[in-house]
Length: 531
Picture 1: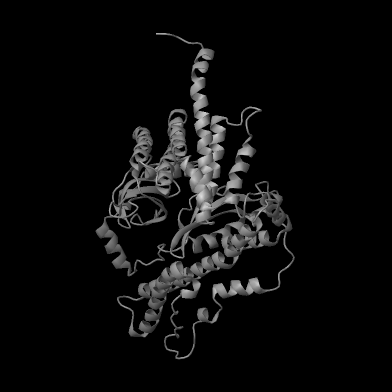
Picture 2: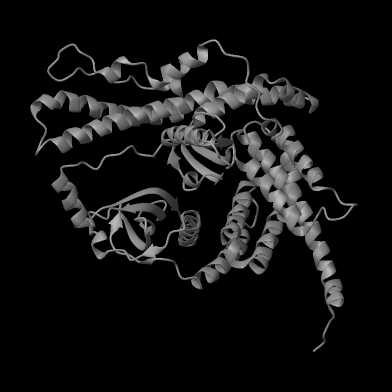
């Protein structure tokens, strides 16, 4: 069997490396074209930003910019950005795409293969992402044979499955269920918090991981929250592993046994609810804009995944104020602000869409919606940004300003209306729960008018949310009339005398504005608005 020196081996590998680089160069061009098409389809789409990050990874992995004769990283990214800003006619983009379809898909597969060999189980999520992206692009471009793309994507998934089979999930096998999902694995830490992995084959997303809190004073209670719902078991197991590892690293906790009494059968859970007199009601996430934090330097934001916008909006305010208070303390030597990237998934005009942006916790950005509004409103009138757009030539400035106007005048009011509906729904549900819990058996007749009104508020929120997602703010149904206090034929409840949250926001925005507050240079240099 022949033997080789290192130099001889590298020389033999060089032709394959050159072929790979050529393939990846074509793949990068194809990803830019796909991103441009996505921007044409929807300027709220997160795909251009995701593809840009992937392009940067491909360039770095294959060292496409590693010699003085090759384009630099900045050259590659500038070319990508030009495609997004230009986003020319559909015919031109489609024609160019036709010549790059196979190179794009097989270039991604080659990258996935390299990650399997070079990075192994540290890149399992990324490998699955590559396989899903291959299928997504092939389906979007109607690439044929599509079955072949599915086949090679499944090869990557099989590699991940093999790696997962060699990993023991932390925690212990668990019994019982929550929200119709059977708990398969759970881990409990010394601070009485933990994570669970569960399965329900009868739902669109049959796997989920939750964080939970265990009540040490009542072993029958465990509260589940921050669920991450996925379609496949490998995704769920990877998410479970990641959440457990991140939590241990962040909070330096150790595992402790899960008390047997903590697990409750479905029957026992039902009995417990009946004994307490409570009713299992909550604001549903269906139809609401959902926020996912894709990156954050703040510990408490790393677990936010598909959380309703109205909750995240309030959470950002609270964390922003707390961090600013901490900065004011003598001797504070931490970060001045904590960068957070997020994505909002929503349905507008009957079509799924998404908005991506950045929020700096501790930078006095206010609520999440305040940040979106003020950032885009500032970009619309900032001379430096407008000059940057004008220098791009053509109709770039006109196009980008039109997008900013839509965000300011349509998207933000759309989000605000969703938040107001959810807050009203949450207040009604909370009061309903209070009435039922206070009643020994059944609420008295005196409460029935109030109960009927609160139930009509919940029903209205559901109907209004569906209308808002399809026909917009102008298509909302008529809201239920304000109810009167039980036993008082004329007095309106204090909460109903006040301006609605949306009215308060509109009033504040219509008030005279102070001079524009300059944003830090780091924001002005970012590519595109709110990225």
